Structures are given as C-alpha cells and as structure tokens.
Length: 423
Image 1 (tube, rainbow, N blue to C red):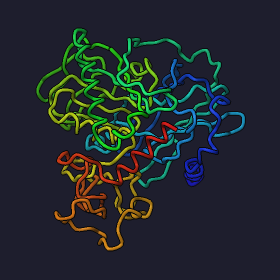
Image 2: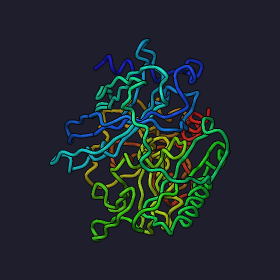
Image 3: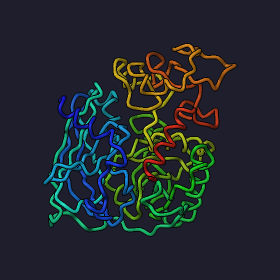
Image 4: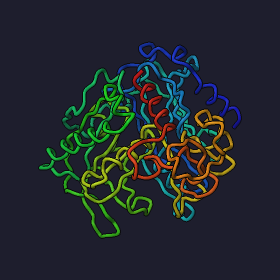
C-alpha cells in the first residue's frame, strides 16, 4: 500500500521540463481500454473488456504526466522495457458515486468503464489505481499492452458527421470539448446545433472561461436518436435514445446521467477531444458531471447557462459542490481526511488549499456576514453536509445559482487547468 502511494506522489509533482517527449513514446492516435466496473459499498473490482484504436488524439502533447493530483482514480501508462512513466491522468466515475449511495449497501452492480491514452509506440503497462476512503491509492487493475496485438479493434461502431462550433487552433494546444446529443431525433439536428451554439455562448459568458475562449475548441457530433426526449422513470416516461440518459440517476430527480460509457466514447471518437459533454433534448431542470468522465445539461431549461457552468466545473477539474443537503450522501467526506477537491477542506491540510488567499484578520472558521459577501475565508457547510466540511466564500457558482461568478479560489484553479491542457 505505502509503495503504491509513494509511486503516485513521485509521479504527480513533475514539471513540464521533466515531461516525456510525445513523439518518442506515442502516435497521434488514441488507444482506448474498456473495462467492467463492479462491486458494492465495500469493494470494487475492474475486469478487462477490450482495446480499441481510435483515429484522433486531442489531448496535450506536452503535459503527458498528470501534475494536478485530482480525481478518485488514476490511469498510469509506463513503458514496459524501461519502466518510464509516459502518461497519466486522474478521473472519476459514476460507479464511484453509486458506491456512496444507499443502494450500494444492499446490492452489487456492474457497469462499463473506459480510459483513453495516446497510442503507445512501444509495449506498455497500464495500471488503474483507486483512491480509498482514507485518500490513499490502491492498484485495482493492470494489463500489459502489446502494440502489435491483432486483437486491438479498429472498427468504428458509431460513425457520424461533426461540425465545428468554436475553432481556436491545434487540438494539442487547446482545451477540446466534444458535444454529444441525446434525445434529438433525425429531424432535430439543426436544433441540436443551435443548442450547441447556446452551450458555447453560455460557457464563455462566465469568467474565467470568457477571458480564455481563444484556448478552446468545441465540436459537435451529429448523431440522432430513435426518439425525441429523455427517460423520466418516476413519471413513467421512457425514450429510445442513443446514449440512454435518464433523470433520477441514483434516484435523484434532477441527476441526468447515463451508465453506458462505451457508447459515449464511441460517439466522442468522431472528433479529437479532452472533455465530453452531452446536451440532452429536454426542458426539465437537471444535469450532472463527473471529473474527466463526462457531463450533461438540459438544453431547454431557463437556468441552463448556470446549470451548465456549474456542471462543467465538476467535469473540467472536479470542483466540489459547496452546499449542504440532506440525503444518502452524508459521510462522503470523512472529516479526518482532506478532500482532493480544490475548493473543499476538512481543515486536515488547509494549508494546501486556499489558506494563502485568506487575510490575516479573517477569523477561521469564518462566520457568515452579509455585509462582506466577497470575503475569502473558511465557511462551514459544503460537500453535502452542514458541519465539518468548509468552502472558500459565502456563495459561488459551485454553491448556488443565485450569483453570476465563481469565487477566487475556483477561478484560480480553473485558469490553472486551462493552461495545463492548452500548454
């Protein structure tokens, strides 16, 4: 256990100067590894499914080793002959969220999962590590990749045309977002394109995305569903859609997600991308997003812009929810473990978070003061609980949709992430 954690700790703090040279280790293509994610509240296992070669690599060719230390999982790719770490990324999964639900105390579950990496030129070892409830990483999966393996699939399962919504430059030097439709019938592709344009306008109407729009590409995949709309199980509404998105995910009415991650990746592979976002053809309030996994937003709701930018904060860099809520996710953050999310703290290692932004005369913890709404401090109530988890400011787009801005802590971290992917 300790050895695994040391390996991760040594891998993360690397600098750009120490990053592997892309063309030495990789082709400008994607290798996708699909797995089955299974378990319950107390245990999880990952089982190999298949390998697929895909035609585009949209990620950075500079920052190959992840230096952000974000996410509940890490995929590490090491050169088999030399043991050199040549690629890594943190991510989260919907299955991990399900494991924190009450249902996971009663039942076992399995669903598809995927990781992607630039296609190695040489044989490599892929490991997937999971962060346990103490914040430590444990190896859950390992497989040797033989690059000449004839069983690496090259078939394309979901080939569709694409259209550019925002084009700023080379995908290797931009943050690349691919937008996927769900619940748009064949005759609604023009509506989907307009909803993609509205997504883009909305995202870049908020700072700091607005000031960095020139570092983003946005592309849409024109993939119709058999039926228009989306599943709403508790209302008896069921629609035959390509991605099978549904309200009441994890039995939460407004949580709008899909467990079909393979089809999601199949669709996304039509374009180079860093992040996947699904636009769902519904006017019902809802959405969701999981760090470096995928995000969703409802196209037709009046609060769509703020829902979108809030959810994109989860997708883009794993920003935590800064509100308290009654429900089955109480205890998601053990109070004696520092959360990995950059905008949450249990005060175990507050010095690693935003302590540098707190004025010396600000009391810690910080009481609510309506006369000083912009003061950065340590406000109790975040991570779905009222006590023990703290946020940086009284309000932020990661707390409520009442305001129009991120707090300085979230803003700083968003900018860091933009430059990490656009280096």
